[in-house]
Length: 141
Image: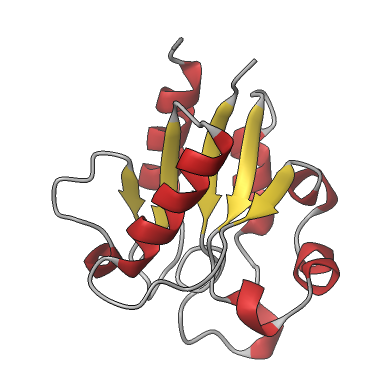
């Protein structure tokens, strides 16, 4: 069965882009709470995947969120809409039908990308984005 998949960025989503070390991942528990009632797979699309081991970045997430992580996007794409291309590669490889990307870098996606749930990077994920995610997860596909 193909479950819904959320592609998750870290910087500008789980914490403000310019967060102090003590504020890293401060929104993780809010996201975990919003996802709790739903069956959703999480794929890490954050550039943290290039700088830290999977074990290191998963340890920073709330356990229930880390438990939903099924993978990470692959090699970096160089060029326009890089994040979108990386996600598209993952989608094709894993035959994903229903997905959303929670990201603060709108410029990394085509303007017509209806799957992007954009965050304000100076704040991170807020109620508006959590409501969009919950609404999407409640819909059957």
